[in-house]
Length: 246
Image (tube, rainbow, N blue to C red; front, side, top):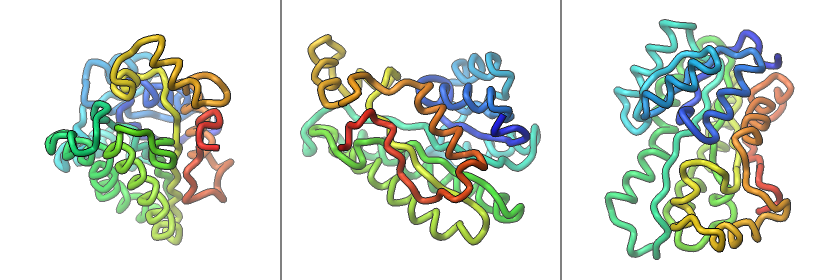
């Protein structure tokens, strides 16, 4: 019960890593707002964990503000924000990625961090405490070919995490990131381009532990970094990757 009495928003929590984080937070005692662009998925996870559901487009400022209003109306200013929502473009040479795909990747993976911070940080500052966790990727540390602009967006998130941590520390707000390797999530097939045994074997060959990340792995890491057990940790980009970045 490391998060007992804490109130958390987890974006992209209708599936994959976000759902794993939401489930773990609930078992650790947190009240969780499950936010996702897919309202049906968000509702299903929220009902499972006894949380609250909200549809949100994290790339839209008005939608993010509405999400915060839902949270405040239900449980007050959140103690924890997890920026998990993310997308990728299909594997392609960097010059062949369309401008629309580029814009969408940066809107969801990067602009969302700005929009959620703009919405939630003032309340955290007023209270004098808070935790923000950004779900980045090993792609931001050790890029894979043909995922250039996705790699860059996750590198941006890691730099943003460190910049936010330095600026917000005097206000009692910690900011960290986790960097998962590819996992059994809806994005896996997009990373690979095609989901075949051969492509899976190729990806797994780059992970020394020999398996993909799981939602449970991310939930465990996130629960630690968002708990008081990590009260001296801010500005880190924790690799939860089975040795991928070694």
